[in-house]
Image (tube, rainbow, N blue to C red; front, side, top):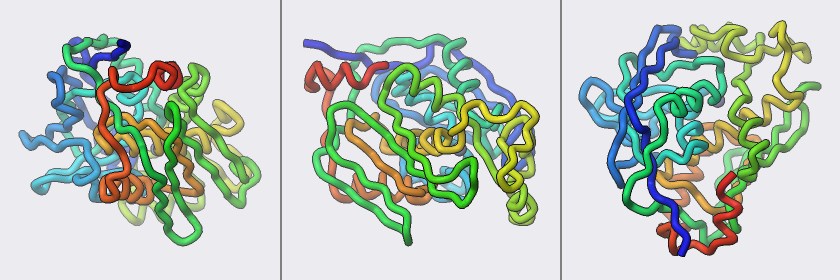
Length: 293
Ligand SMILES: [Zn+2]
C-alpha cells in the first residue's frame, strides 16, 4: 500500500507586504494546524475556511467572507499551498488583503519552505472527479473530466500580440511547477485608471505586476516567460480550485475563465457531487506518479 500523509507547516512564519488592490500594508502569519483542520484564514478572531461557500467577491481577485470579515486576494497563497501539498494551516491576517509580494506565488512558496513542512498522522484526502462537469458564462467556459493525475489548462484569447491566443497546461511536472509558480499577475495600462476608480489596484506597481501598454511590456526586466500571462491564469485557476478543500484528481480546461467562473466550477463540482473523496491509500499507484512532481 502506498500512502501520502497530510501536511502542515513546521513552525510559525510571518509574511509582510502590501495589498495589490487596497495598497495598504499587511502582515500575515502562517501557523501549523492538525489533521483534517483544512486551510483557514483567521481575521479578528473569526475563522474563515478557505472553501468556496465563503467565496463572495471575484473582482480581479478572490475574496473570502464570513461574519462580516473579509480576506481578499487569496488565490496566489492557495496555489502556493497546493504546490507545497499543505492540507492544514491557519493564516492569521492583519489587514483585509493578502500581500501581493512579487505578483506570483513563488515568494509564498519560499516562506512555506522556510517554515518547513511537517508530516501529520492521517492520510491525505483527494477529490477524485468521476463525472464531466461544465460551467459557462457568455463565451467563456470551464470543464473538468475524470483523469489519471491532475492537469489544469488555460486557454487565453486576447486581442493582444503578446498574450494572443495561447494555451498552457500544468501537469504536475517539476518544470510546470516552476513556470506556473513564478508567473506574475498582469494588467493593461488602459485599465489601471478604471481599476483605481473602482478602488482596485491601488498597490499595483511594476514591482508586483506585469503592465502592458498595448502590445508593449512596461516592466524594464520584461517577461519572465514569453507566455507568462497565460501561466499566471493557470496559477489563478489552481489557487481557486483549492477552494474545493481537497486537491483534485481530474483534468480541468478553462477557456478565458476568471475567478468568478473558477468558483462557479468548484460550486458545480459540489452541487453535482461529481467527485468522490478518497484516502491516498485508495488511489492507484500510477495515478500517484502523475500527482507528485
Ligand atoms: Zn492572480
